[in-house]
Length: 588
Image (cartoon, rainbow, N blue to C red; front, side, top):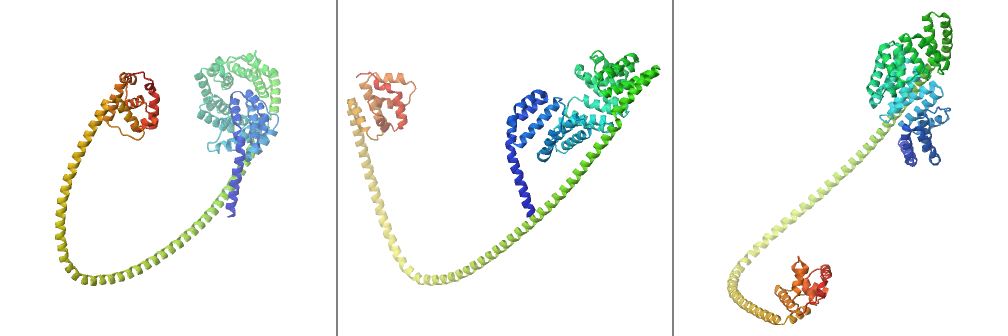
């Protein structure tokens, strides 16, 4: 129970944290918009981010840390070199404890970028590797572009410390993600070929470089691949692949001799050396030593000059550039680079071992907690089952007692029924004699009933004849009265209209004959009314005609409703519609 209570407390605390952090996350809509803009124009995104600083600083801790992380991201994309690791340390501490897997991938990636700018290779590699670890263990919840860039940075770092095997693995990871994302694969292939070339695996390197050249030719966009073509020129020249180097040279538009640049000038030197243009190669190498700023290119230039002068037999210049070559070799300190790589690998392996040990401990605790929960659940289920068993058994006993009581009651009822039957049998025996006596009496009553029934039938037939005669006489009277009434009304139209007005004070059902008398009376008084009515109405119904005639004799809406039995709304609407009837100027 104590463990269960502990779990409940953890869940409640987590829910509260999520509740309070939701308000921050809801306010970060502008953050996501700026992040998207930063992928295309980081400088504009930085300006937009500065405008939100006051608003962000008034929010919670989550929003503030997301704001700071976005600033580091945009500066990295804008190639603004980091000068301090104070901010990234704070972000690492926060997101390692409170961030999602995606946020941990992002913060460790940019930690690697910061330490790369600070020339701290071991820590840069460590955080790039951690970023890959979060991405690989994120179960699909990761940023694939960031993962690809982490592989690319690690390839460069491992190459610089001469750990070429690791550099190849990183390039292969970068190429795999690039192909999955269907992006331009020229850079991953270049990284892969350069690492193979450093291990003197010329066949594999050439295959990777050929893939780059094929991609550039297929794209038909050499101007946008000038930097890649210079690297290919340098590597093909080093491998003495004359035709492919010449193809690259023909696609390059820059002139590094007149418009000096370190690496392009060194690539031209390699190409001229392969083509046997020694003077041009020496000129390019001297330009690199005189004007160049990159110690790696100067190292390659001095080494090539030493070899070229040895080939020419100029021992003095060969020795001079050999001294320069050795001095630059000491400056590069390749031994130190290898030591740094070993340190990084050891530190990251220690991190993996610690993480594995923590995972095992967490898994052990998880299994122990599951065992406790299962045990408690089993005990609870057993208790519930026992309680249900007791209740079911008690219910069964109650049903048995109830059935026993009913059986006793049925038995008693059966005994009482037997006694009643015996008593009825005795009563039947005594009543049988009385039945015989009453039988003769019943026969006499039956004959009497038959006689009375015959007399009733005769009376009924007589009554029917009288009713029929009375009905015929009443019909004759009605017909006579009707004809008399019709004759009187036909002779006096005003009397007909007055009669209808008098009857409209109450409910009256007008017959077709009554309506005919009304029409004849109105037509007699207003000869032109009917023709105008037919012209005005157009399509009409019998009820509309009736309403117009009643309106013409001056009946009110309630009186019209009494006679026509139409609804009050219909009468009011038609009276409004046909109000011209009241203003008719027909005369008798």
